[in-house]
Length: 435
Image (cartoon, rainbow, N blue to C red):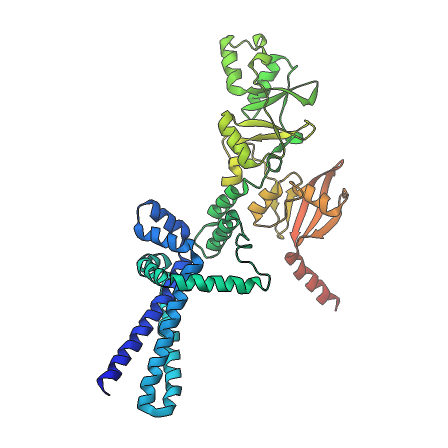
């Protein structure tokens, strides 16, 4: 072989190297973490700044890389064909096709993309500067191609840019967290916390409030010594005061304020003036989002609010702890009353109090029952059944069997929930026995 053939072979090898560079760069830049690059840019990393700049013009970036990649691949194929034609004659075309395909697939596609997908951030930072030169070089060509493509697609009624935000930033972040959890990168507790934080915008205070039927309140007309005993026996530090009827809340009694007042009168409870000690109640609409309510708690510097509907009727109460529990899970302290509303049975079914919130049940059991139409599990059964069921009635929906175990007037107080997959073996065994 003469010297020109060796030069051509070196040129072909160089083309394969450049092809691998373009393929790996495209994979690394598109797979790199935008959050990581943003953090590095804030830290002063100029390469990260360049990566972010390239990604903001993604179409131009991809166009420049594709042009460069196709140019070197075409050049490699032409040079290889010429070399093998001169050596083997016409059959060299077949050999050239085989050689180019193997080298492009293995060394210019799979190998660089495998490296890039495993180390996207590192590779993206390394290739950022040379790729920026390539994009600048092929910039005018890329712009012309973009204009041509947009015009061609517009003939078919397709306008680029209309559907770019199919997922919101919150949904993208939630999906990323779920993916990392499945891959083992994020523990369940961490996933639940991040999910709870993202849910604050979508949930309203009515979804987490303590319903008025479960509120612990004190009659403001009771003797002061009786009110002191009520406060001391309560696990809560803030208690609503009502007068005349339970819905008429006239104040909020704080245990610390009561103790200070009691100390000021020398421990003589009969001298207390409860109305003067009580704080003014704070009422918030039931449709207030948890994010807005959290901000309001921080601004007002209080931890307790009464929830009212559109007619001003008290529906329940919400505390700062209720909102924080949506993020970090159930918080227990030494004064909490240990009441479990979810009891797993030996056969795999679960006995659930009707007042248990659907979100809490989903979190504990890792289920996915819908909570758009109802807040509690009893409310979900009534909504799906479209009636108030009787004791013993059973319903099947959302992949579970719901059986009413106990009912008080129109309230479902106890349910047994069984996943349908636990019932299938029983049915199969029963069918086999009948045969």
